[in-house]
Length: 537
Ligand code: N01
Image 1 (cartoon, rainbow, N blue to C red):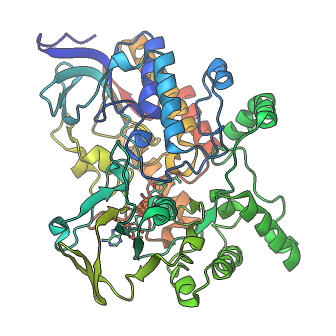
Image 2: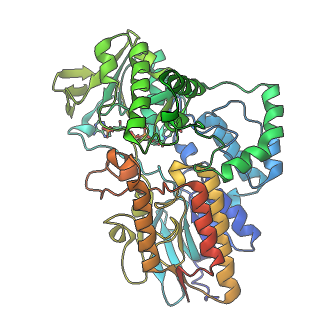
Image 3: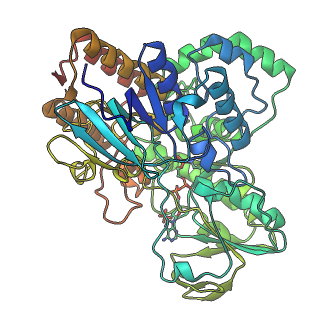
């Protein structure tokens, strides 16, 4: 083991950045393996995504009973979800419960943000500093920093001049925000915008939605769980989890058993209608080939577009709400509660920025090419520098002087979506090259943390102090990730999966779309093959 550091430096085996689902489980698992684990979290408490994204309407688009830890039967039995799709406060309460149950908080420094990390080759340790001046030294650095946690604020002319209240969905204030009687503008119509718009519309005097690209969204069909549901959930939990672990996306849902071409038109429409009524993102997977075969995609897309036209009364508004730039499901399909119907309200307007772009933000509101829209509150629901932003915003430098931002300039190269060539003893959980955002983030976090702790334990047992993926193994993984994406329609969309929402970001499909179970198998193979993809020193 390497020598301890200077007295003012806090030492540990494993330093985890982030106290969301992945960071919390890192503490639990690493501690149980006998490792001294500490953490740093920028927020004031645990929760990660669910700590920051407190905007009205924030709700997970994965069912609550699936979007929860599976590692402890007792935890699974004792926690009772109140709804099919849990809202942010309930998920945050769940994470807090887990933190209490497993005594996680004492491991974390809260209200501190990691700013720099340098790998010192002589001690084989990461030297880490935070924005409050804390210095830490760890054998392993774990970036549990989230895939959608580096908010993106667009550089619109005059954006700082607005005299009213400015809010961001990704950093919504803790206390109540009252927009009643106010003129509210929302920029952005991704999942965050689409979830908040119906709620804001209920109290704003007027709500203006500034839409650059329309998105597909499917009603959640959310419902409270009754007592019968709770009994059924417990009876079926083991089977449901087993199905999820063996699935392509970490959830228990399966596509229609037949190919679309084996069905007549009526049967196709019935299948799509059934999925539409079931609600949520799974509509994108009604048929097995839906995001692979353009002809299948077109049938689902036309079905969704007919739904929009049937709900929205103003035909021009309906047309404006219909996406024109991507196959359905190739951007994360949104899950809503009354989004399209909101545009039937008298106090709601849609501004199609493709027709009338924003010219500037002024102290009074937003000036488009069509004139000034006066506002009291301006909400940015403008997304994230996804998958890489939270990592590259930390100044991380490897032993050969290369920063991770430079290393990933042409796209994020990882091995197995967890480790990075040139950056020993570093793990990026739910990172680029992993199923993460395309699967169930909680289960992928569990699997990755288990795999990572196995690797650390293996190294410790064999007396290795340094573990780094081989560059050829990482390049092969990068190619595999890209080939998997190229076999689908996903690269056709200017999505955050592709890095297309951030100016200057290299366009590479970042998550692994080759399948959750396949990914688990490949990780297991890498371990069972004696970690041949790594250099151990
Ligand atoms: O962000 P987004 P999000 N001028 O990137 C627009 C997860 N999530 O926070 O597409 C005008 O999807 C941008 O327009 P365009 C989920 O995985 C899950 O909503 O770039 N508009 C777009 O409309 C999701 O996919 C849940 O043309 C500008 C919007 O801002 C991911 O997080 C809830 C602009 C950003 O949409 C991200 O969702 C919430 C500009 N200059 C989030 N810049 C659930 O579980 C950007 N936009 C339900």
